[in-house]
Each structure stands twice: as structure tokens, then as C-alpha cells.
Length: 248
Image (tube, rainbow, N blue to C red; front, top):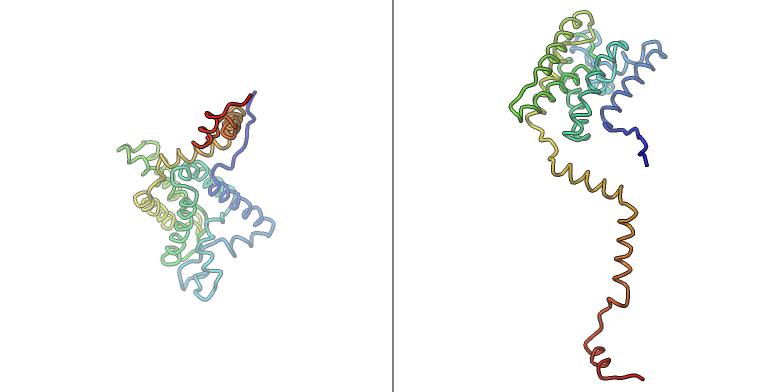
């Protein structure tokens, strides 16, 4: 009997993040481009036009929410191509809860750096992308090997940032490079899930899910045998009575 193919939500943090980014950009077009500038951009340097206002509660939220906003579909797809590739791998290694914390910390760090140094608004998930790239490259240091492919990826991403950065005031290269520093910090400070624990959890869940008919049948027979009179122990007094009595 062939098994049915199933679509699994294998990386909840990464997939949810990607879906939210796409929905926000889609809604922004319906609202004539007013949603993202108002809610999903980090404020600029204090004192500049559109700078951080410490009296505004929304400005504190924007220190985190700016990673969900993008200038256009090209900007979004460029970031998601890296996030959807590296995010699931990091969730498998560190766990979804830890990866979600990494996303939040990186968003906050890049937002604060923008408020302190950059006089323009900031938006986009490039900081998270660079964090994932550096984090994924540090993972291989356990084997004392640095793949050349990751060096190329870092070079291409940095090159794109340096080329496209000056063209858009809303994409701050310095703040995005800070995401790479966050990835370095996470790589050296956060311990991955142990292989034994992960394998044990996977094995337990699989055994509970895939218990066969014959295994259930065997368990039921064992329970019935244990309750059968043949296996009931009698007391010494009962044994002596049976031996000394003859029934005709």
C-alpha cells in the first residue's frame, strides 16, 4: 500500500515570517502605500526627519516590526530566497523557539542601530538574512571546515547591499551588517539541540504514531493472559487444601 504524500509545516517560524511579509506588502498596495511607512519601518536617528520619538509607543513597536516591511516584491523575494533556504535548517538545529528569539533580537539590534546612527527610515529583513548566513557558516566550524559556497554567498550578499544601499534611503547597509554580528554572537553562544535528545523525541513520536496492528494485538493478548486464571497465584493454604482433598 502506497503512503500518501503530506505537506508539513516543517519550519513554523520561517514560514510564518515569510507569509506575514507577503501579506503586509500585499495589504500595503491596497492601502496605497501607507501601511508600511506608518507601521513597518524603523525610525531614523533622533532629531532627523522621521526620527525616533521616545514619547510614541508606536515607535518602540517599529524597532521590531521593520523587518516585516519591504519596498517592493523584488526586495521581498530577494530576502525570502535566503530566509526560506537557511531558516528551516537553523530551526532543525536550534529549535523553533530559539530561532524566533534570534529573529526578535536581530530586529531589535538593527532597529536600535538605525535610531542611533542612520538619519533615514529602515525596513526589510536583510539583517535577519545576514544573521542566518553567518550563523549557518559558523555551524560548520565544528568540523574545522568553512565551505567555499558560504564565502561566495556572503560576498554576493554584501556586494548586493553595497551596490543597492546608496540607491535607497530606506535600506541601511550598516544596520544590516549588524545582523551578521548577531549571527556571530548566536553561533558562539547558543548551543544546538543535542542529537540524542532530538533522536529520542523523534523515535518516541514515531513509535506512538506508527504502532502496527500486530503490536496492538500482541499487547492486548498479553493483557488478557495476565488476567487469565491460569496465571493467578494461589496461597499456600489453598495448595495444601487441594493436595489433601480428593473429590469423587
